[in-house]
Image (cartoon, rainbow, N blue to C red; front, side):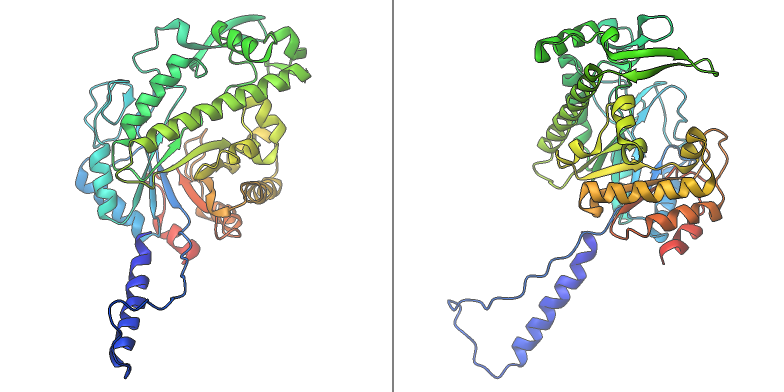
Length: 411
């Protein structure tokens, strides 16, 4: 880490002065050097802000924002490097496409090549820059290729339908993403955070070719009739499943492993591009259910933390969005905070090294778009700080984020 250098040089300086003051005669150059104690410096935890959009209209304003992040104690900026429909454009960018990526590649539409200057400004202000990048939804320019699309089983209509994004189990889709991530890693970024679209819901992926791959690898058919029991409609009009069969759980674990295989391929491709500059950090976003209701996470998203930890990624980003949890689960404020604490402890226990856990706190109510009061965020932030070795990230780091408040939380 950058902050370890002054301490190291101070030790060397002290040893040099002691050697100069010693009355002992100088030893010949061929004499063995004395053993010195090995000093291990623990890496500084990630202290991050995650940027969805920026109201900066010039590069000078971007650098000023980066300086303010650093002054508030942030050491990492996680920047969105993709543009999906509905995403807000960076004001300092000069977009030429409505969707795509913010780095140069032949694998996707390029909105504007801004990643290089962002790295320069971040490093100039003693910040690490992580690229926050999509996977399944990176179908920019490929939207019309029906054969590569993910497919779902519509529980109400009892038929297969196309759903959003690519079918990431298909070999050509994986190759496309590998090339895309290889291009991303050519930039001097310090890390990559995979977007939360590296998932398959409980009724995805029924792409015919994926169904054949599953049958060839397991000897079983992936048929809805073998997975879902008691499909019913709730009071909100949603079609739900009363019970999942043993065959469903086997299929979910198979999908989970294929998604982790893809993450491994993307990591290897990125690292291969960084032979001259090793140290690229690689992590994945995980839904809050992975640490609060693991069985639900496996069913609904094909996500499970323990198998991911066995792959030894550099960090695991846990989306402990308290307002979202409170609404979706119908919890009280106190119960929500208790669940956040439970999820934090579970994540640190499963990962083993709290320094590899990245706890994410929402700063905006995602449904209303309103800023969450500092007092409310402080209550949640204090839970994170009970695990001082764990990393944290505030999302989104928009213009409403009170950096003075952030600085007060741990200074």
